[in-house]
Image 1 (cartoon, rainbow, N blue to C red):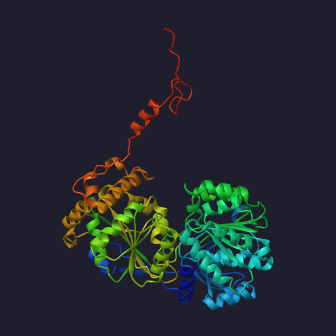
Image 2: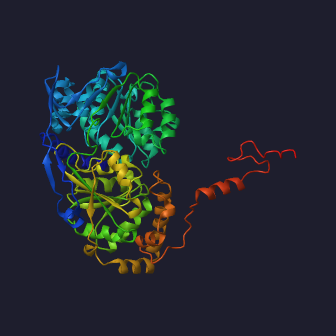
Image 3: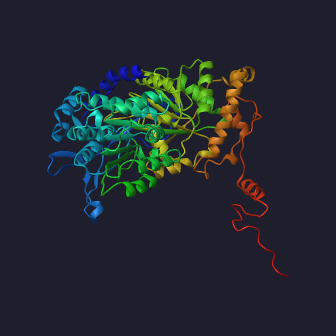
Length: 568
C-alpha cells in the first residue's frame, strides 16, 4: 500500500497545479427544459451567464465575490460568510508562513487561496477554534493542514513529543489522500506524519506511533483502538484536533466512537470541524467542543449548493428496466470517466459481474474489500483518464479523483446531503465541469422535492426506451444457469430490499409499496427469488414485541407490567 501512496504523489502534484492555475470563470446555469437521455450522453447544454458582484474586503486588498459580515450579537462577530465562486486573489504568500511550508507550497504549485482557506487559515494559525462549511472540492484539506504544519513548527515538535495534531477522517480512502497531501506539505519540516486506519497492520501502526507521529491522520475506530491499547502512543501533548467531514463522522456508525475519543483526548486543545454540510449533530458537537469558534460558511445564501460547473439531471424508469438503462448508458460512454453509486456492497459485487458478462470493463470499491485492494483500486482509478468505477458511499466523501465526467446514482441516496456528497466527486475546483444522472423509479419521484428544497437544481431527462439495448433475456439466462452468479444476484436482491427498508425518507422510499416482481427483474430474475427478506410492517413489529413480553407483562409497550383488573 505504501508503494501505491508514493506512486500517487506525482499525480497529486499535477492535479494541484492544474486546479490552482485557473482564473475566475463566469458561472453558467443550465437551461430550464426537458432533455433526452440520449442527448445527455453526448453533451448537456448550458446557457445564460450570471452576474457577479465584486466587493473589496477592507484591510486585505482582496477581491471576493460578495462577502457579508454579520455584526449582530457576540456570536455573529466571528462569522465570515462568502458567496459565489471558490477562488480568491489572496495569495498564500500573504499568510507569512514558515520558510519550509512556503517552499513546499511553491513546489506543488499553490498560489491563491480558495474562500474556505482564506476564511479559515488565519483564525486557526491564531489558535482559534473553527467551524467550517464549504461545498466539496473547495479546498478544505489545506484549510486545516497548513495551520497544522505551522503549529507543529512553532511548537518545535519532535518525535519524542508524540502527537501534536490529530486529523480524523470518516473513510480510509480520504485518510490516505489527506496523508499524501500532508506528506507533500511537511516534506521540508522535521516533524513526522503518521496514519492509522482500519485494514492496515495494527502492530506496524503501533510501532510507528511509539516512534512518534507529530501529525496523525486517522479513522475513528482505529484511533480509538490505539488510544485504548497502544502504550507507546503519546497524545498528552495534543494541541489541535481536526474533524474532517464532521457530519459523516457523527452519523450512526461513528458517533459512539467519537464520543469516546473526545473523552480520552486532552480537554485543553484547539478544535476545528470541517464539512460540506452542517447538520444538527455537527452543531451540537460544536456547542460542547468548540470555544467561541469562528464560523466560516462559504455556501450560506447560495441559490444552489452543488458545484457551479455541474450539470444535473434525473430520469424516471420502471424498476425492471433500470439495469438495461445502466448497461446502455455505460456502453455509450466508453471514453468517459464514470462513477456509479449503489446502496450496498452486495449490489456492487453483483453488478460488477454483470458488467463483465456485458463486456463493460469496470472496477469496484466497497467496504467488503480488503484494504490493499481498496487502496490499489482507488489509486488506479485516480490515475486513469477513462474508466468506470462501481462503488458504495465509501467513495462519496472528500475523495479528490481528477477528471470524473459522470456521476451516476443508480440507487438513490438516503437523503439530499448524501446526494450532494456523491455528485461532489465531479466538477471539483475552479472552472471544472461535470455531469450527474440520478435514476429513479416512479414510486421515488417525490424525492426531487427534497432535492429542490435543499437547493439542488436537477432537471428531468426524457427517456426513449427504444434506445435501450435488448440484453435482458441473455442476462436472465446467465443468472439462471450460473450457480455463483445466481447466489450473488440473490444476495444483492436481499441487500437492496434491506437497504430500501432502512431508508430515512419512509414517506417516499416505502419498501411495502415496491413491486417485488419488477425489482427481481432488475436483478435478472424471472420472478422474485425465494430468499428471507426479514421485513415486517409496523403493526407486525408491535405484535412481535408484545408477544415477547414476560409473564409479568413488562415490555416496551407495557413498561409498568400488567394492569390489575378493575373492581366490578
